[in-house]
Length: 364
Ligand code: NAD
Ligand code: DAU
Image (cartoon, rainbow, N blue to C red; front, side, top):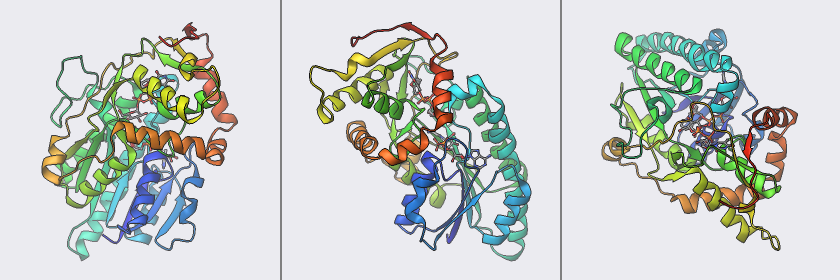
């Protein structure tokens, strides 16, 4: 592959992917991103003078713009990272999720299908469309349920996961109906550098650093299967290059951890890295009202990608978390940029509406 169009490449996972792709010279990248609140163009500053990287601000739902880009750059593949991605925001205001995740994906599929059909007239058809999705489409597991595998039925529980499930179905249908060459990945919770600090891990690191409360929803016993973002990016590259067309691949870290444990681990590391006299960061832990419809447990069975493509995650949760905490402590400029006025307003809306049910100043 010479050139790949990446959508949503200024967000967390997309940017990590682009940095890796250019670092290893996997291919040239054109990044189409709307630059919503969740993005930070500064993340990709290091590619400013890279002739193998181009940026275009725009919306995947803008068919004219997408078609023009496809015709201009003639990419060999499109990877669709673009999405509204935060569950809490989807609960408070779902409309943007419908607009980008469903309508946007539909329009992107239409533009790419037209491009693929035209391109197939003049050259052998090697084009691929890789759709990046989530394990949340499978719903919630009980404590003894087996992990999600590719054949697990979809049962999305939030407006976010319902919108992602819709997009997955659309992508699948374009293969089934038109033979359009698609691949889908369903990944578990990512963490690592450049994640917007509305998500659990960066929010907790930065709140703790600033001695703010660490708000845990419900009883803190919800379980997520954490994967370091670099491992996710390697998996995406493998699926892009070697995945079987029409297939979906589950990607997970095999790291099932409760939210309370995640936050306690962050506090333990901060006690070592940024010690303060007579102070334990865990004393900031506060249990607040649960997220409505909160999924209890996610776990991913990655057997298929391991067996077919030889993918194995390199980072343990311990090593990945240490790297991530170190990164957030050091990157003060990047953090100040994303914590704008709009960010402060969101934090207030989500956490300050008398949601605290139990303020605790000691670790549970
Ligand atoms: P993010 O919110 O950090 O970034 C999303 C990016 O998409 C932003 O740069 C934003 O500006 C851009 N964008 C939004 N709407 C757009 C539009 N209409 N047109 C063009 N660009 C648009 O998200 P992320 O965490 O990097 O997630 C990327 C993808 O991976 C999403 O599809 C998400 O559903 C999926 N995913 C995320 C995780 C996770 O843990 N973060 C896990 C599994 C799957
Ligand atoms: O599983 C993959 C998904 O992981 C992705 O598809 C989503 O884009 C991504 O945002 C993430 O969804 P979650 O809802 O699992 O992630 P979040 O970081 O928002 O929350 C992780 C867990 O922590 C969840 O159980 C809710 C809890 N939580 C979260 C926040 C922000 C808290 O207890 N307190 C908080 O303040």
